[in-house]
Length: 251
Ligand code: NDP
Image (cartoon, rainbow, N blue to C red; front, side, top):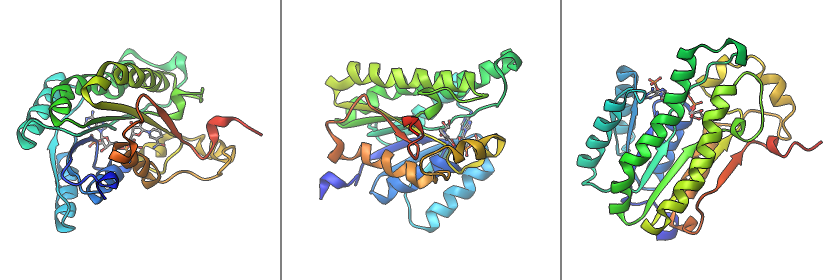
């Protein structure tokens, strides 16, 4: 049934070569979407594209550094010509962190984290707007974090980018609802990906989670796909925690 399908829909998923983004690419294609993705490492990107091709999945890709404004513009031009000016789904997934105390962060750290996580997601949403509107049924999903909802050690800049994303979700939902564009965010807790290798205190945090294990990338991608489905057509402006219950801070 059409309510539970993304058949024929077009999607841009940033950072699809690893982790959560990789799972999102596979989940959206499984629901019938045609996907374009990107990452900085061109070798890894081409390997993934070959793997997807051999599985019969419709995925294309561009090597780009989302920190650079001109590369974001070029990416959206590619997407525009590939998908005939129409985009149904933008997933702002690419992101990074550097674990440090607030007193230790440098200006370069600040700029790297802010630009990768927030500025690029903001700008890509602006660039995608005409394409999302032209599709007649547009969706933006921000991959935020529980750290943007409650305070967690060693991530003050990262957490600020995610808090900003959570508010942006609400503002864009209000500005673009009239254009048939829904805007939602998912806020994962600790998910088993390469990003987590750098977090030394992860095991202590996992032990304090009601479901005491890390999440898997496909436990995030399933919610992303659901939010993009016609079945979710009245949901907009929401930030959904995928966190094994961590953010309820119960007993
Ligand atoms: P990974 O580090 O495993 O993957 C990140 C992906 O983004 C890679 O494909 C990477 O490719 C790409 N990427 C990173 N920087 C850039 C850039 N400047 N330009 C283009 N592509 C880039 O991360 P996760 O899958 O763990 O994280 C994905 C998202 O989920 C992030 O926004 C993160 O903040 C969020 N998240 C993750 C959690 C976790 O526990 N893992 C928890 C909560 C949120 P390349 O390096 O080649 O550029």
